[in-house]
Length: 204
Image (cartoon, rainbow, N blue to C red; front, side):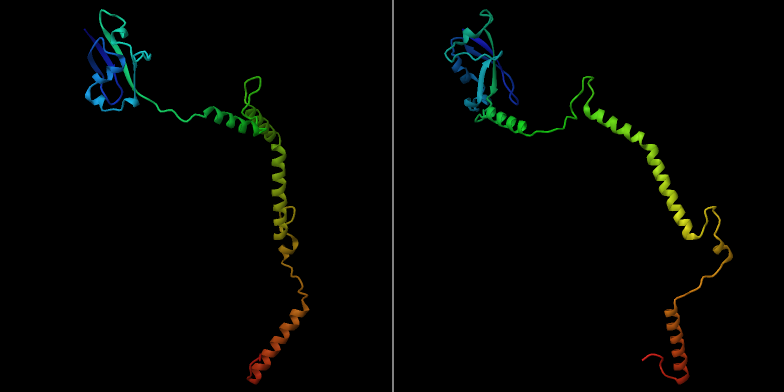
């Protein structure tokens, strides 16, 4: 008497339908696998029922069928996942200890009782203060521009009424009182005249 086995495999292998004697033990089922599955290492494969249960290796195939009249068994072949060396829990505890040791006062991501983030509330306060101080800021900018303009007008000789000062209008001259410069200029002129008259260079 035989039992039909519906074998679900994994990519890239196709599923298979096997006809196996009903008295075959569960541990002997891999010997009936297709050739493309027999080339794989049995240690890397896990054979189980379709719902995930793993029968005993001494269980006959006939005992795995839900309906003895149909003699149909669904099995699943999956690759094993190699486990690590462990220690994941200790790593989590160490990471938690490092996180708890790093104290911070940054609570911007927290929320208040109304559900608003604290960072949003702080930004709203800063914006309100900025808008409140805007008139004073504009007044200070206007005063600075006015002072700069007045200084420029004084340099250009423009009066407070916007008209040129009296010195600029009349073109009055100012006296040059640098006597040292005048004496040096007079000496240079005399030396040049004497040199031209005698035919000698003015400077030695």
